[in-house]
Length: 155
Image (cartoon, rainbow, N blue to C red):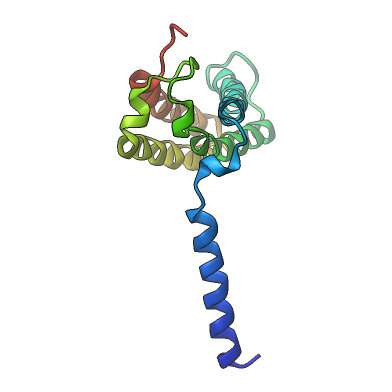
């Protein structure tokens, strides 16, 4: 393929990608309940696998490098998913999310970026028990930072 054909193809592909990202997340959910179910499912899976990793890190279950790696990869993937489910139509729902989250999305994005950095490091750390122990703590602190500000445990 010649360069003259490649450049327009790349431009078209780039434009299509930008358009896909520009589509509001709320368009992906038919009802606010769908967005809530989506994000809660991602958080549930993330929590279940963090629990498995924490149990290994705390010595409550034997360390298994393969199982740790598997759970860490799931945590890392799930940590990237729930955020598009925080659409404005869900702000008034009684879900355990404080309404302030929707008013502070820039801060939430920073917290999410921190979480994603930590979960990425969790995947690397899962290969050894000592590194897993340290990184489970750091990842847990990243989760807690958001929970402390935006999770209402009374609901």
